Image 1 (cartoon, rainbow, N blue to C red):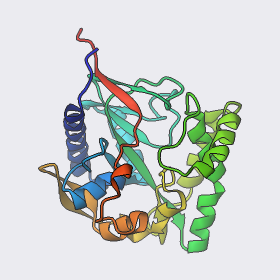
Image 2 (image 1 turned 90 degrees about the vertical axis):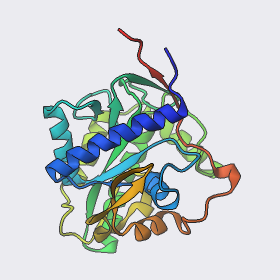
Image 3 (image 1 turned 135 degrees about the horizontal axis):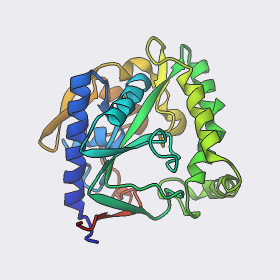
Image 4 (image 1 turned 60 degrees about the vertical axis):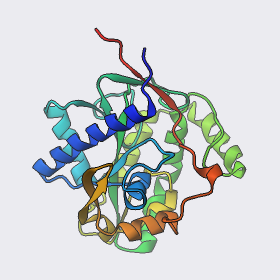
Length: 274
């Protein structure tokens, strides 16, 4: 199979995002660029130069509606979520290019077919007090960490976390070999679906990589504005400065050269032509 180059991958992802944007606009689904993608939009007006992915986020109600829409309608991408493929044991969805295949080096233990993708994260309500939001985060923290480890094909050193966490990560890896990941996943999702998003004071992406930092004021996620990204325009949280400062601090200052690395660990190929 022919390998997908870095620039080709970005173009594929942009095309997927453009279709998601169109679907959301036509159906009044709320979404925003998120994480490093939103940071890239604000600081670089496109991809962070050393990054190669696109992340978006949707309030849980819109996330669920978007999944149902994709199950009922033809789209150029293939939506992969635990609602569409039982081998996919993640708490967020992926919109995958149909003409590509991705080989994960560490993740995707259960062999779900993936392609070059855009990650789609649900934003969950967490309650009306900071203490209550923290409790909601902690309630499923152990299960979330265990589910992450359950998807590892093998144990691998973290690219982003300090070495002091490695013994803990290894313990989760060992324990994860003996659980039923589907039951854990459904337990986590039921807990957060029972907390409404609209009308509460705190919310967050509970399957995000920043753990407790994901807890923020719900009003950060409610309104969006159009921002340029790679000569196109997409939706972003109107309060993007609060969001990015909460996650990254001084986000307009790039990290040192040694930290300017991608966090993904996969290889993408075009599917063989029929």
